Length: 251
Length: 301
Image 1 (cartoon, each protein chain N blue to C red):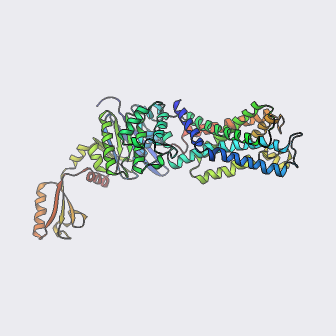
Image 2 (cartoon, one colour):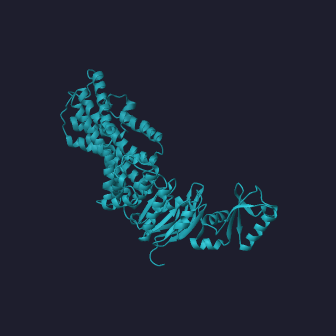
Image 3 (cartoon, each protein chain N blue to C red):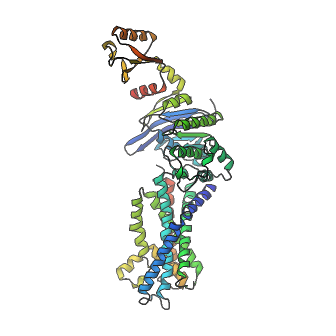
């Protein structure tokens, strides 16, 4: 398994060397969201009784940043390697498809968790909510990062050009994360959008993560866990099938 | 020759859509050989190498490296194989030494620095070890590609046009190094467009055309089978006498080449020129080289 160890280490080093872009920039973006939305909405919205809007927003923003960066990590690593051609250096050695998958997946989860933790620490400048069930939040953070990391591997393998990856990001990842209850409770939505949201796995990630913070949520946490776990397993399975077949990597 | 062949390919077929890249390619390279894979662009050389390296999958047929099937037993096969790819790829985030350390790690080798140092030194890269890949010239990047293929000391080494766009000095030092590797028992398979390199280095040659092997023989017997001589002459006239016009290929201004089957023909040509009152400025008589044989085979295959 030492091929795996090296590939994982390379994946971590890759984003760590450019931490300014890969960690600091998304943290700043999330804090700007917090600043703007809390300024605009804090006095108008109370989603759960006794929980201020800024507090409500914190877990949503942490999770959104975590998910987006988990996706960005594996997808951009793969597309860059494919376009510069240096993907060949990991295709030539005896690295199995499972090792390949795990290295990119764990790299993504780690980047997501790092950014998520950074956003959370940053929000403490504004508000420091007490966390009811930290372990539950951590489970959702890990699984959510894993699911988006696996989706990032699929997108990175499928895309042949940067604009294809950008399309994946803009038309799939952004709507999924924005229409997931980061900024609101889906119970406040009109019936149609409420029903649409119920088919969005990202909604369950954020809802479950938020349950860990406050002990209250839109749907029962074990329902969320089931949905997130199923989505993660399904996407990982798809990813492994593609890697095993060598889809778009080994012609 | 006995023992497991370094490379064994049987009945390989590979299509890319409508294009048949490999058609029933079968080939056997023994351990310790220095072997050339020749052919025009698009003949299937790189596709064949990709199948051997596991970068492409054949539609049918089988390929083995030292007895290990490249699909079923891919881990063992890839450990035995070092590939220098044709494309000049590199990771812009890494230095030369980091590149080689990572490459070692992908093969499960930690603490490989002694060998890395030796390879760096032999490829003339020792003073570039801590330079970022981005800062290297094309020739230097090519050397790093060679070094990357060697980190795990593979017994079988494939070089896909290693000297494309490389200056004379590097070409010579590279071949010297590859020769040493071959002398110490490594099997070398190379593709090149410089046929004089193949002629000088390789004991055996396979020629591919449109995905098919059209010639497979030792370099020596290909050269002797061609027979005859090549007579190159530079004239002081811009045209040949009519009697000789159909027999020569024009090489350049006032320069012509005749293919001779016997020395008697030479006398006839010189007599023809004398009769027409045409003088010769320069002349040379050579045995046919691999390039000429290559051109002949490609024309007739």
